[in-house]
Length: 146
Image 1 (cartoon, rainbow, N blue to C red):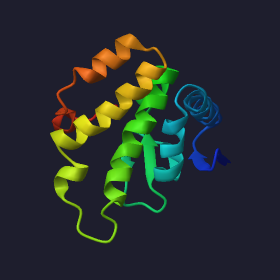
Image 2 (image 1 turned 120 degrees about the vertical axis):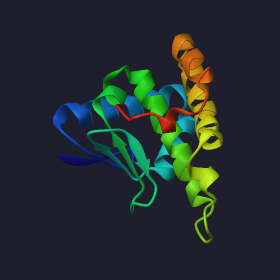
Image 3 (image 1 turned 180 degrees about the vertical axis):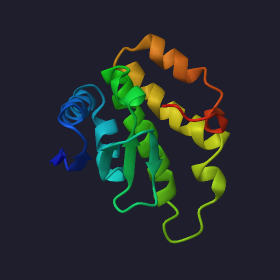
């Protein structure tokens, strides 16, 4: 199924669409600037086997695996902002070659983690914000399971 909600295309099964709407609503309530960032830099949220931001797609697409979507609603909402940060950073260089460290690597991940922490802190998710804050930004090297 495909629907548009809060100016974002959402693709997936009924459960995924409902859960994604709830995560977007949570952003609107607890961290409105995060929702604005998601609306500006993610054009599609798509249910997928694994999670990751496809900045090259038109519109930019946040592919979402089950572990990311269903761990918790605050987690899911915060990952939207994390991946919108990747997309924002890519689109800053739209008319020129994008340096690899803007999209990939430890520096890029730490920048995205920082925005994700801001969302989790606004939602008073102390455990999750501490978890993200303590990540070393090297998870892009790991075998993807999320």
